[in-house]
Image (tube, rainbow, N blue to C red; front, top):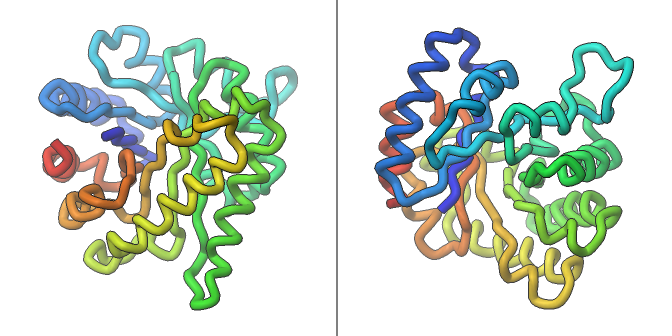
Length: 247
């Protein structure tokens, strides 16, 4: 299993960040799961260069620009230079901030060009009885991957992030059967976009109020390859318990 710990902006104190990073390394050493830390940009530069563990690092986003006169922007190349090997692209919070389909597609391309493995976030606003939410997820995947070459498309990790499930009681998140349906559907869409049988090797993660209480059931039979974890990843006890559920 892959577990992406998205710290978001919860941690903004360097001493707290160091302690949480040390704990995350211990969790990774004791686990068979792959741990990827998506931490604030300044901390990647501080931690990744001297990192000797199996913990990997991800950008939480990359700039739309590739460099030049763009004050405040952090390019995919800059993230790669300090040790990041992944990049979250199209997270629902970035889409709300204005990242439309074109922006997401361009950021995806920038990440790949500079050696970052993109974690493409997709997900519907709400579920409807007519199944229109499936079309929404399909459109997000297709518009992001179509501009890429077939080889580049094989490098994408898809994180299914239903927006309606974020921030709600974890006992009422997505049902395992519904997640199974979405994983199969996402793989079907990828099969149409990827060459040959390469889609069989594509990784699909789940991220939607991931908590330790329900993660084992979601992982058991859904076919999901891992999880994108938000708030729970910055609480050491909760994150450790969550990872243990998947060992």
